[in-house]
Length: 518
Image (spheres, rainbow, N blue to C red):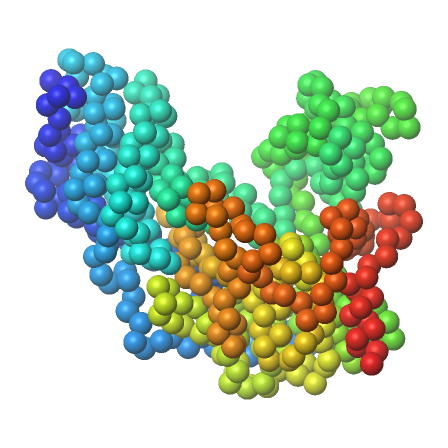
């Protein structure tokens, strides 16, 4: 019989849990990192450097390697070679016992150990991820914080586990996410399979849906050219009032009902010019939004906008700057306003083309010790081109690496408003089942050893206003309304949509053009 008063470790180590039979087995479960996690592929805001092939410009030009390399610190010890420093065996044991007790209480007093649905794999996944967090988090996690985390994870299990549904898969997901996000920082989290897939789509600037950008009231603002909505004949200005027979009144409601699996259909009713049109049947498809946009902003001045630093964006950026130079651009503006960041490889590759040989691009530290730094390998091909970088409060992470490095090595060339202030870096470790742990493992520093991480309220973890970030050399403060109008206009231009009303003045771009004209 199983009851909460007589729970012992032997119950957890029952045959149902893969025939483990001693405390030594628990040590292995708790502190041995599963191979698929230890060898996880980093992505997102931090990616170890690797050689990339980048086209210089023009059609049919051979590819060549990017101009930077990763230089590890020989004195830095990989934390994964050591036992978890702060997470205790007793804390894990208490958590596992509570999980067993939660299921046992629901099964009733006549239940046997073999009735438990909790498996060794569930426990391995939980323990392995907690060990990874403890080993790799940017700061040491005190025992008291782990005590609270164990309690919080147990509370989540008590709230979410249902013995009838045998839902330890989703419950363990929530428990790990609680440890990653609640006790650490806003940028650490644990994704289930669907969430990780959405992140991957976001990194590739794509999603499965109907291909329409909406206003808050559900009116179509932009129809993505060539997307499902475009093929179905929907137009900007159409107001979506019904999806699959259900009335909708906001963009959020529309999005929830139109996102779905590729190839499935959805029926949409819109009102156009006051008339309700017959329902349109749209087949959901992969929608690709534009991430890189370029033009000649003035005679001899090239302009490049980058929406985020995706794995392939360095190739695009370097290629379009080469093409702009062929068209007569002798100077260039790189606009990363509203760019939330992305991969370090991508931004390092771009930066290397504006820097001299052997210059530090960015360094990464964990608990005060340098892990590695990215360094240029040869003079950049755009070294002689005068450059301006545009930023605002929506420029974060890799965008700030770009602005901070250029500021340190090229001088006062950053224009706009204070950037977001995200000086930490994350690595993403997927498992073989499609889940992934995103964990803050360090902080990054500019070539002059500056860290721009904003201060955070210790209780709310909210960013403290006017702290951190890259402060532009040419500061231009705009109202929130003006900033939104400029970014909306810029987004429409990047996506190839027609203007939505009269042109809005852009003082930040204008200031950059004035500076380059001197």
